[in-house]
Image (cartoon, rainbow, N blue to C red; front, side):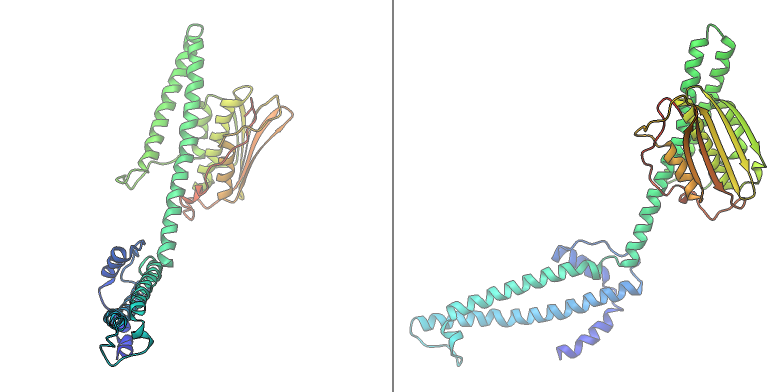
Length: 372
């Protein structure tokens, strides 16, 4: 009768609203640790919980029956063992070795029952996370969510490095120049300090936009990000004497390619400001139907040597690689040149989102000592 009822229990378990009850019991009574599924009403969760409920009923029924039978039987054996020890015979119709050695067999039955219950408890405790916890779909969804979160953090770090780091470099150079020339050339000092103020205001605006991305109550809309249309302003305010040469129409470049090209140029000019022999650079931008090619050249008297801890060149290469392009830097005859080639995408292309553009963590960089 017990075996005949098991299929009915298995069928009914798919419809019972007992999933959270079973999880609570497994956590409290077995000490099992697992996370609850995200979708408690999916059939994947239902059938796994149904398997657990059926197993619970079958194993629990068997162990309960064995406990109800073996505990009195062990007491019977012990009593008969005592009677046999004092020569009083047995207290029932059963005889033989079990009753004759009741003082030994009775406790052995109890120990075996305890060990069996402990083994079954350990087995179902190990099985609980698989039947009551998250399934493969839940773990995949959690992994994707974690990947998206890490990608967003990498993007925020990249934006801070590229925008705010560039702005702070400009502020430092311009303010130092103004402090040295404030007496000899007040007009230049005033111009430099005005550039410092403008750069600082832009950095605050970008910093506010990046921090806004971290806020849970942020607004749905964000301010527009800079692209190739802002190259002239970048060349005028970056603190580097920049010769900007543009071939083609930058306005025809897709939004993603335009924005990433601007960031690459910005990072290259930041490196010029920090490391070049002179704060001077030539920026050549070639816009074609197939894509955008950019080269930023600056004076470098010495061959570059590895500089640990930098992220600029790696960041530029990652930006280009995500769009299917390349970015590299090299030294030749006293000139350090950063070159990048990015394939163009359709204007206002939305096939790549902001998170995907920076789905890699920053690494160490290689930059020349005393050059950019």
